[in-house]
View 1 (spheres, rainbow, N blue to C red):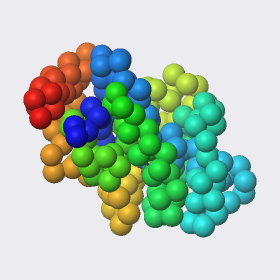
View 2: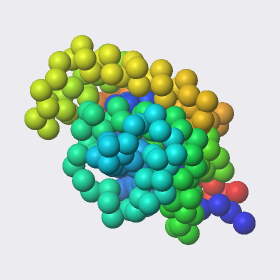
View 3: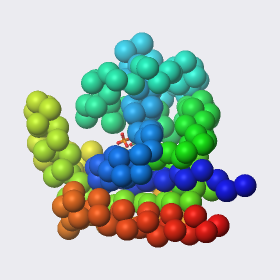
Amino acid sequence: MKPPFVITVDGPAASGKGTVAGRLAAAYGLPMLDTGLLYRAVGVLAQRGGIDLEDALASAAIARRLTADQLADPDFRTRGAGEAASRVAVHPDVRAALKDLQVAFARQPDGAVLDGRDQGTVICPEAPAKLYVTAAPEVRADRRWKQLTAQGEAVGFAEILDDIRKRDERDGGRAAAPMRPAPDAVLLDTSEMTIEQAADAARRIVEAARARWETS
Ligand code: DC
């Protein structure tokens, strides 16, 4: 049987993948899951509970109790939450605890869009459309800095660039489901693109995948 039309959008922090995923979800009328938010929620809830982020068992217990209705908290969008997320995301038990929710989301009969680090490689290796969205670290740092200062966080560009580099290293270097493009993902480098250009390019990539999926 034909798999549902799932679009996976992976890539490093602040590459534009969330925006691209949102545009694709709107264009195809598909539900979208920002999987980074799951890890952010686990990181922040662990910190609130006084749990050491290196503690895999205690972090995994938080992950197992996490429900979708807990995800709207604005604290999960802060710089600290991104860092905490990246730290709890190295634990295989945390990843395992969050897997079922993501797989179930991807199995919706009409399809779905999921963005993250391992959607095309681990969560939905059978997805008919896969993108890996990247951009140069300096460009990503500039975007993240603008976003955070607009949210009222007082932070310098150099600190953000340092965060981005460390996050790339941790997310790409971990043993469990490291950030990387699936062999069949199409790379989209948005360094020199506006949001509109990136969204258009993503749409063209997905259109080609959809045409193949329709005739499969
Ligand atoms: O996409 P984001 O910046 O919100 O993700 C925050 C962190 O969560 C990221 O640095 C690594 C982790 N993450 C992950 O390991 N796997 C995912 N599918 C999504 C996020």
